[in-house]
Amino acid sequence: MQFTWKRMLGLSLTALLSFSLAACSGGSNSASNGGSSNAAVESASTDSGSNSSSGDGGSNAAAGNVDETGWDGSKYAEPITLTTVKGVGTNYYFKKGETMENNVLQRYMKEHLGIDVKYDWVVTDTNDAYKTKLRLMLSSGEKMPDVITYRGDIETVNMLIDSGQFMDVGELFDKYANDTYKEGVALNPDTWLAVTRDGKRMALPILDYAYNDDMLLWLRQDWMDKLGLQPPTTLADFEKIMDAFVNQDPDGNGKKDTIGLATGFKNTFLGWMSDISWVFGDYGTLPGQWNLASDGTLTYGSVDPASKQALATLKTWMDKGYISKDSGLKDETGASELFTKGQAGAIVGRNWLPDWPFGDLLNNVPGAKYKGYPLPAGPDGKIGAQSGNPSVNGWMLINKNAKHPEALLRYYNFLFDNWANPAKGSEFENGFAEGYDWAKLPDGTITKDPQKYPDLFPDYADRTHLVEPIYYSLTFEGARIPSLYADTMIKLANGGKPETPYEIQTAAIRKPENIEAMKIVLDQKDIRMKNYFQGPLTETMKSKNELLNKLINQTYSKIIYGQASIDEFDSMVESWKKSGGDQITKEVNEWYQSASNK
Image (cartoon, rainbow, N blue to C red; front, side):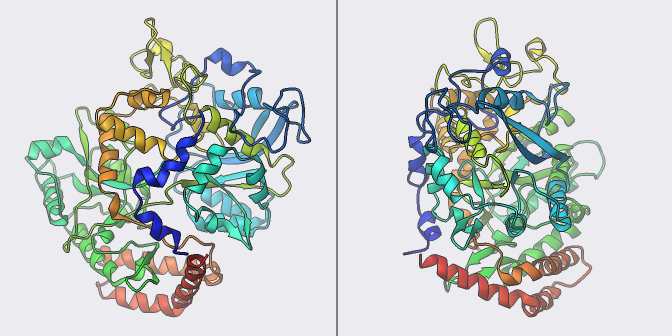
């Protein structure tokens, strides 16, 4: 049959995601749901757990009838322990006295599901600290915990799989996953390809919202207004805006200390925030991924001739001060601080940046305003931007020696059933826990404003950010039904009245700029450029990837900084091909043909 990505690219949002609308009540996104009082959080509930859509895996649904795993239909009769490790993001906030190892969500899951999550270690995940620590564990042969959850490069996922410490999760998924989870996974028939080995599914996908990874341009609207600038439609328009941001003192301090675009390429030219890959997209390619050529084969974007044009543009931007001299030293998060500290006037990122980190901009620069815009077109009218798997944003691996491998699925099932799209009047209707991510005013209305109502949100360490316990979950943001977020945001953008708890909470917490940004993303959804290689690392990749990536990144940086001529790109491409690139290209296309014929 035809390769599934080809079919999917032509589907509308409604058609693409229709299967997931059959979901039963369950969670919400990280900024939109939750809801139980502190009392409920601290006490066990006799009716919590999976609803009728849950995969019981053959266990009896009635409480008290304990199956062979110790599950009584709603929880483990005797609490079980799952060990794991964690990289804590900079968007994690805690109440005073709470930590990743001791918090309201951890206590709740232990009381209500009998699942006690223990951490072998926790690290603040800046500068790829989590990935680095995992790779050090692998290189030293350390024993892995029961569960590893990972969101990032697929190469690290492959390294974990290839360590031999993790199990085939296929039968577990088929037996225990509930209908909502299965329907979300089924949206993309190629979901499992990246983690399949000899027909075995080696990791469970973490579902995300469709189009949530798509990019748009964010501009300092107060600077635009002050300088009388018009929105850009072309790359040339955008360059004029950046020139004004650099040379016309938009912050009014009398100093030439501002830049055009916040970007960082210390680790990659295909970033999840402060992205620069869209410039390559304006010339018809994307670096760091396998793109579909006109002849139907896959080519590596980093060595595509179009990348040479993009590099020439970036060198010009560096020369003119449009991008920071430190861009090559900054990762995505570090580069975003150029924007949030008021130095840069533009950044390319996802629709949800108003939720984080743009709150820091408003704190750092009183009166600052920002607004989202479509990505501008290149010299020949081309626009291209990255897009992840439309329903997956992370993987979960289960240790072969885990005593309760099914517990992770029961944990995820519970969040799908109770958090992802909660029913009116249900426990998580307003948020995860009262006094954490929501509070009730005397008139009965719900607030999520800890700054305005400090008495209702006690023990906050930082009142400029809402404490959202769902981030502490094993699955990053609890559970997400792929279609729900985009459908809700478009409804709100078009003036629709929020009706369900999910819609009401989304409307309450999502900023107008965020809602409008999602509309821009969907209006521009045809610019998405998929990475057509979704398989495991090829044999040559395993031994050559690190060397070849270093060759590319060093050459790119030298060209941008003027340390090498633009023609150095051609020499790099030849070296890449001879040093294993040609063989990798052959292996990738062999995989693609095999996948296309399935």
